[in-house]
Length: 288
Image 1: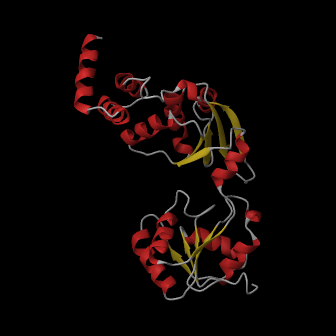
Image 2 (image 1 turned 90 degrees about the vertical axis):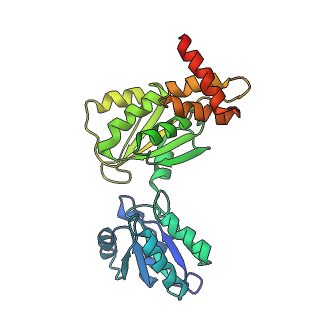
Image 3 (image 1 turned 30 degrees about the vertical axis):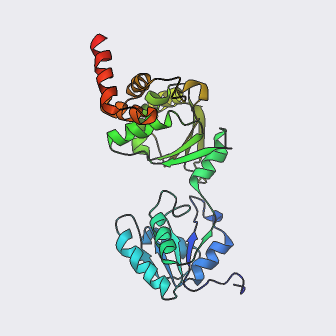
């Protein structure tokens, strides 16, 4: 490396790696991986295969969701003593829906320098291929597994006007599409992007209704990035003065929330007493 681009002591490098096509790795990323004192990897076996392909010999340490607290402290301690480290994930950009987020935060807290070596990112790749609006977007990662949290997240997304992006595994895709259609309706546009940058890359631009129909007859294969059209502002209740707390409760329940959660959300948004709203709803439900 030139003096300007030489790896700096005591610095954490966030290094993006290919999401499928090895040719997508940058020259700068290869130089950093070759020069740092050690590499923190989500799965050392996967990273070893990548390094072997490019003829790089390096010291690897494991850093993932289940050991991030202990290993994070060890990594920051080594950085503080002057060593340099490259952080990599199995594919794409570390710290995006990834435990690398915690390591970067810890470095920031301890005053350890961090820099990024940009490259492949599945969500950005999918967004650019989606054919949906890209000026304003939001990344949601994987939806929560717990039913209550999942319902709440989907209910919040019903009011989201920006294009939003989800990750999903093939064995969970059908269930997720079913949940999406319940929340957003059949006509909402979606781009289902799978196996991005790989030989079998596929982008299906369709609607939620047609996607559910297609996958009722075809088994999902490969990892998916789902890019979903945002809500039409005219279709969602935004004005707390125009939409009553009672109407909001009914709206949230229709969206899949429990009565308790719907009342809690509506009371907070409209700045009314939860107990008073509960009493009003009891009277409404009793008269129905």
